[in-house]
Image (cartoon, rainbow, N blue to C red; front, side, top):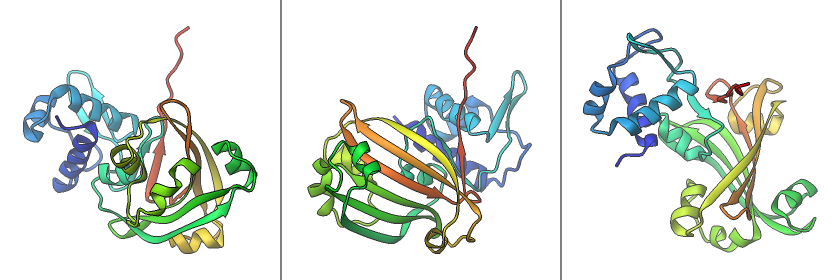
Length: 239
């Protein structure tokens, strides 16, 4: 059965292939399910994500309409996706423009997140992630010591870290805690993302564990806001 991510990508492709614009109407759920050859329950999950990202809206009894820009990469932060998954789900080809892997001394912040002593050697991987060859994210990943050996021997600079952990290492990824911080684009980030110095960029600091709560990654990610949209589904508590 197709996952909602693959269906989401197919929906992005449909919008782009048919040059749909804001206000245009989507086919019905039944038509989409037949067109894509997928089940309606999984299709609804993908449509729900697009709605939470502000890309579509539904008027009961009338239909579903385009309400956002499908040319940007959209991420719903309450769903834990890797960068590769985000870019692919948006219908773009993921790639890497800059890649650097080193052993460094853990800063107090990294040490606290990974539950290791200050100054302990940790593996850091720095990459500029691209969509269709254009830089969209500068990511800095610090690996738990338990992952160092496996990732030191992984030579693919375009590797999906989540996919490698799940499929090659048999690790079940658990929850992530993320903090969103707007920052001014530094000279270093400007060069990496081909973006203007001092213009605002979105920084996300994220701590990821396995299903048992053991630390896996501490990540800093810098997103170009003109090419990446971060959304959050805020639910109102019933009184």
